[in-house]
Image (cartoon, rainbow over all chains, first blue to last red; front, side):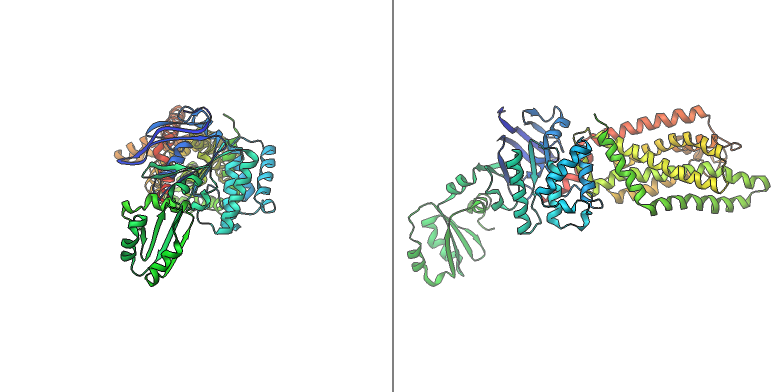
Length: 310
Length: 261
């Protein structure tokens, strides 16, 4: 393991019966990093988080958090990490205050320290005047915010966020990210994120794509998108087969989704206007743009070699 | 290990107990119905002095019933919290996981004792027990409450969901209650039932409570009752803690979340 790492794993594996959910995972995440683990449903993201936070034991392999071996002292690890579960960990029948006071007591914070910290966090989330409100009366975004506040009450060195914005609308998702960014800036914690919304992972320092429990591809979001292609060309056409066979000698096999084709283009001197002219009426729409993490995801998990249909 | 997390878990259960007035009132109504309806009904079939004797005989029994229901239902929150996510808050806390079980069982014992004390006050007001008897019932009640909490903890850590627990209520609580000597003297039961009563730890709680009421026949010695109650509770709590600390208990909780991954 690397001694500067906030999180390290070597050969970390989890099996449920015959199924291997996480397979031989090697991670090194530097302290203070914003790290994203991305992948399709059932790829092993949550299981990885549960192993790293001592919620479930690894079948084999080792892991360290801030230099401490996980298996050696789970209680000490739980003191070091914060975890925001995919499903809420709050009592809906209690108020924000009761929930956070309870969580603070579980972290052995004195009532005085707990009150100060709760004030501080609720101010970050703009919930200071709702402290006595029952959780049931809050919006989904506000409840999530309280969940995150609960996860950072004890100022963890490493914060795990398991799909923190799932099920939230766009304004709430943005708000949650502003809070996380502020917490990261003010408290300097390492953040380990899993998310379905890949545009949210663009802010990460490093992302890894995981499929069937194995790492597929990793790097900084900028490097990954640059490596993927210079441009992504998207064409809508009633004759996808024809366009596909016409253009694949130039750009390689596309990803096809019904009547939509998506090509990745490595060259930076393609004359798209001339191409548009030559295709003429055969296409109903055509656009080219810079690639993003969604494209990296699609080309990693739905590439033409894997069947090229989404 | 600090006591603050334990106090928080116990405090949460206590505040819920006093907040849910209906639950508290219904917990008082159940034994009163048993005492007044069954007690008077069955009692009317008995002759002369036996009639009054049956009501006195039932007092320890219905007190034990209150303790059993209260402690078991309170231990059920170990499953309930797992279903509704609060268990996650406790699991991620920096305490050994068996402390969650111990805290819940302390809360279950206290909940049972609160209800038992309320019932005793009610019985005092109705003139069914004297102050002296009520007082001497307290210590046996504590031991019985611990034993019932231990039974509840054991059932809770082995049940996966609340549905399962509802089934267990019918298959465990009622047999445990009826086959304990709470309603009739053990010595008059057919042999095979007698053996079931002997292996039911709750029987010894009922018997210990009977020792506190004068003129009520008992089946075992005080020492036997205390030794079995304490011995059983210690073993059951140890098994509950061990089982809860094992991974498989938490799998359903997190595995379901993992499915959506």
